[in-house]
Amino acid sequence: MIFSPLIDQLIMALRCLPGVGPKSAQRMAFHILERERSSGLNLAKILETAIMQVKHCQRCRTLSETTLCNLCANLNRDQSLLCIVETPADVIAIEQTGSYRGYYFVLLGRLSPLDGIGPEELGLDQLLKNLTEHPPQEVILATNPTVEGEATAHYLAEIIKQRNINTSRIAHGVPLGGELEFVDGNTLARALTERSEV
Amino acid sequence: MHQTILLQPSYILHTRPYRDTSLLLEIFSRDHGRINAVARSARGPKSRFKGMLQQFVPLVLSWQGRTELMNLTVAESYGISHYLTGEALLCGIYLNELLMRLLHRHDAHPGLFAAYQQALIGLQQQQQQITLRLFEKRLLIELGYALQLDKDASTGMDIMLEQYYYFDPIQGLISCANHASKKNIFRGESLLALHYEELTDREHLRDAKRLLRLAVMSLLDNKPLKSRELFLYQLFPLKKQE
Ligand SMILES: [Zn+2]
Image (cartoon, rainbow over all chains, first blue to last red; front, side):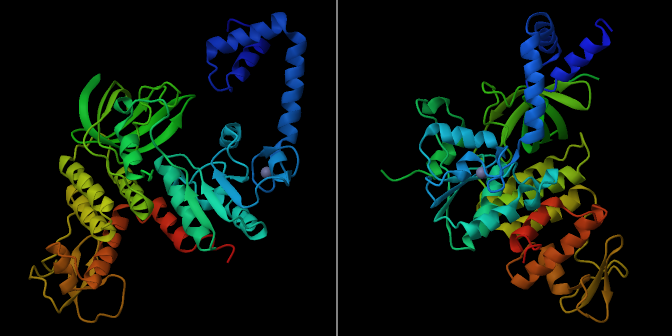
């Protein structure tokens, strides 16, 4: 052991963060201890408070310290649209486009039978309850274009259709500003299959 | 033992996030069978593998390593991908689960690889039932558990159209007198239809499904398949609620 036990523990603890390997954890630990002691203390406090208080929104399951998150509590959004995404980060990504005004539902994952993740793990009973209490006119399935994301979208579409609600799937295709030559074959094949009329 | 494999025709059966930005891959390769590999930084924004490491896409892969866990070095797509959607996609996941559960690592099965490729084409053409049955039959042959569908296992006599047979996963098909609707008794006609792979009749197809399920499940020690649960969920969504 090169460092004293406490410093070692701090370095190990920092490594739980994404993208932080042993070297950067060490740099962070020394930075806090040498130069940023008060900000470090502040970080420790806010980290503890956030972990204790941030839970999941009762309606859409996104991260929130209030029972209803800001989005769900906002009555000025478009009641006719519900967008289903995999993660809270996906909500932020869609919000930042500024092109969607409806509500969300966050699965906190995707169906992955081979990893033991089934419909129950995705809070689908909550989703069905929402669809009954606040029925939208259209549900937009915005799960990722991976095999698991597609399987999830297919599964959701089947059960939502039984309730006579329109369902749509976000389009997949060629990135804007890209050149066809450099787009991978699968994306291109899909963009061709799902082409739209102009 | 250090191994370097170059440009091997392969399919990805399953992926799982690994460390920060990497992916853990279950690979089914033509000449080296089932392989586990890591694709480093595959989930990073500038990954050279971006969009490539997907199931049901024909790939050529290169890897190297000296342990059970190989290091993926090159991935290129070749040929036309099997674009599966909806139920065909769920069937594809079922095929992948069968291969992951039943193939040993590093056991080559080029014949099965060809059968898998054929099955993906069948699924894409929306011929789910026949495709799955023929693949299951082929899988049993490749693993050394071929079903003897034209001979009575106890007498060695030809299977007869009108006769009924009892299926024992170890011994095979044995003629029996009654045909009380038990789940392991089959009519000769259905057995021969599967033998000659002429599954156009719906009843023959249903019997083939029942027989192959018994045979496959016995190989799996009767431990249920996860991908099958998804089909059941779909038929009875959230039965807890109803
Ligand atoms: Zn909410």
